[in-house]
Image (cartoon, rainbow, N blue to C red; front, side, top):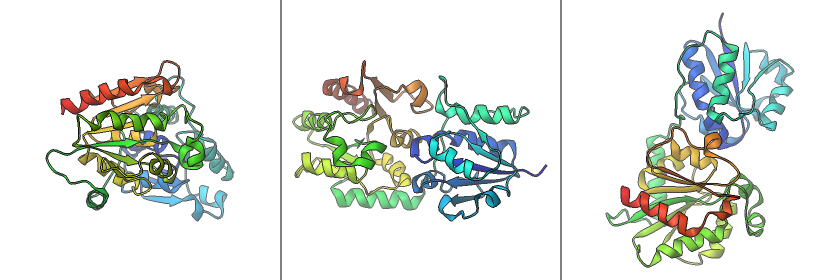
Length: 319
């Protein structure tokens, strides 16, 4: 049988990255198959940009006749069943294979489990890590952006990458942060500010590289009127540039967000803050010795500035 597979990518960065082990497994199982990706959003398309598994990556905006398009494929897959991904699959009016939500398996395992159910003779071993393919051009671009924003690249300089937002913050901008406690995936922004202040006296060589969207950019400008300690790259990095950024940073600090998964594809030490989610289900894979997870007992805002500072220092000193 000549296989033609269509993988419908979910819309956000983290979930799309979590499907890459299943995507690689599908190629290992069927080396000569046509495997195409249907990207719902621009960011999901960038997650699989340059991924050698795919023959082509197609934007959903390019599809005018969904049933006709879907009929070109022998199998259609939704590895992470988000409402948007399911809605796109249902437009095709043809059967598709849908993974079940993790209970309590890690998101990485959801697509893999689906494939082994569809293909009982699939005995290939799945990868333990995600796949992302930043290029030399991304490294050049991010270095130039760092330099323009204030990085000196001197031997004494310590860069800490810090992603302060999440997808909800990106959508709601400043209104999101005005609620005080942002969300179950986002540490209150005032805590990030107090954290940077706590390092100011004893670590003058430390600079904070802040990433995120326009929503985070507004709150950053509110708290940091003018500071030579802040390198503001919000709304300036692509997914692949974000991955390339890790090469220049001593530690990556964030909540349970898509950029956390991006960082996990590199070797950068990571400090990740969790609230109502848990690293066993949504955390980075594989877990490395230079990763630290802090879990809020009731919610993410119960994690203190002092806790984060102590664990950051552990990662900084260990390098």
